[in-house]
Length: 137
Image 1: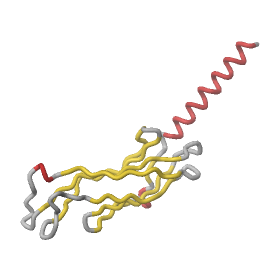
Image 2: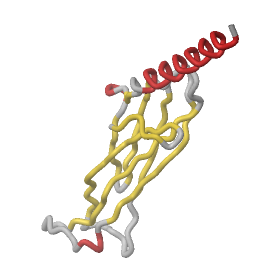
Image 3: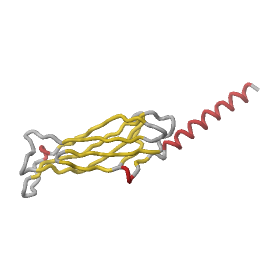
Image 4: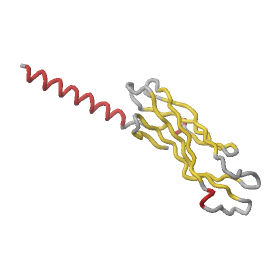
């Protein structure tokens, strides 16, 4: 009888773990509520993440991009003037959903001032739970 109880408990624990993993597989950014816009040298990401499950209380979100100064003749600088920038935050999950805004500003030394302009590439928005990336936009 004791072995049956232990076996049933083990099956229940494994079932619970499997359900959690299956639930985490549905994490995604809501496309019509997620966007990245630019104002000057700043990128702003507005996002909504769903499918996080009811047991997740926070989600870490990061916005990253490569930036470089471009002169008025559209000539790109040497590789030394191209830099990677990132911004991150932790957001509260309510009913399996989290939403918020992240800002990222490219700052260069020397400054990238007019007539030079900042050009962004490789813009990525990621969500992670306990250090594991669960969604990318």
